[in-house]
Length: 250
Image (cartoon, rainbow, N blue to C red; front, side, top):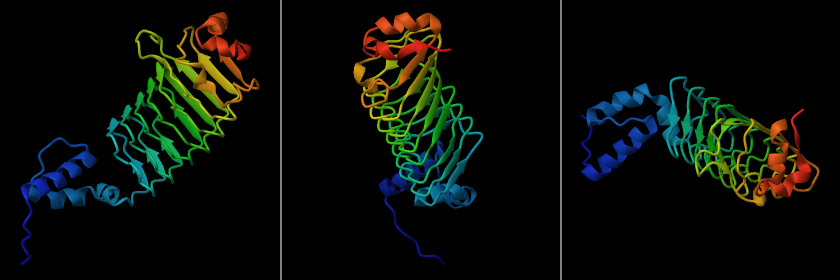
């Protein structure tokens, strides 16, 4: 007979809460259910131990805050139907190089921070990019964002090899006070020479520091906008600092 182990209620609650968080469950977990749950969800056992190397789930629609934080062995993520990724969800996954999150609408603060092996981000439905969400992805070369209303502070800061960013604007951009491109959004993207903003609308620029340290700020890069919006951008608050770089999409 196995030895009985005494456990306080507080300890048991902490264990089951941690387990539920990893599974994304809100249901009560009873003591007798844990063994079968662990056997059924071996991938979550790997996750808890930090040994997970890949994540693939076509049914998941969200990723919780801190869910994969600092999973040092994680290399590949396939979550094609996820629409929301919580804060710090994939931060410091140093081996992560392949990620498919093409239906994401909200990318939380620090969500992909420090994943320097990623070379391209394709987020055609992204509405909100949180602060520091894609910070420090040093091997990133190209970013495609669609349906954008907000790019937070330092969202793409420090991506020193990023050369091109293509943004399509949400048709309602500017309709909310929080909409806009925030300070230092593309700070220290040294090679950023081509920013394309698609859509006959103006997205506000919180401050001129958004492009500090980029080829655009050094007058060797260009900002391309809808032909009908060229003069609007050239004279808009803070955008006017980059009037020399603003041209029509050809």
